[in-house]
Length: 139
Image 1 (tube, rainbow, N blue to C red):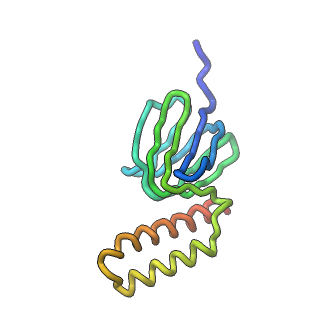
Image 2 (spheres, one colour):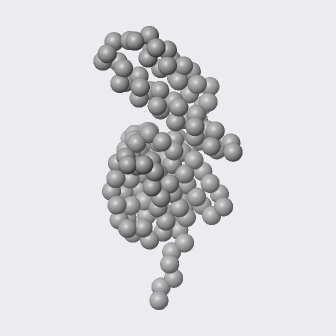
Image 3 (tube, rainbow, N blue to C red):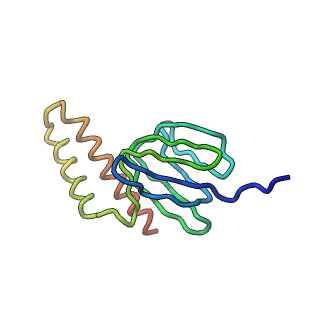
């Protein structure tokens, strides 16, 4: 009987760069229906992603990424995350994220033009997520 795999390959890519490409032992990702986990040997899956954190476990080491939508493809040999944006917690500019959150909150309070509301809500959600991921990494 074959020994079960202890890891799988995770690749995180955006339209602009490859963010991560290493073996991992588990991930937790922000699916459209809520967060889901992947362990070695997971059933193949293709799902869309929403704004949220991506938790990556490499044995005892845990890394967080801020994800802003995209898709996850789970295959027998690994997982590929195709994200609109992805940023490791260590790369997040907290000051910039706080400023973006402040701008978006102010625009929503001002009641800007209706066509701008959804875009502003998206900006606010992304800024809050980046701050949440940075905070998670500090714990």
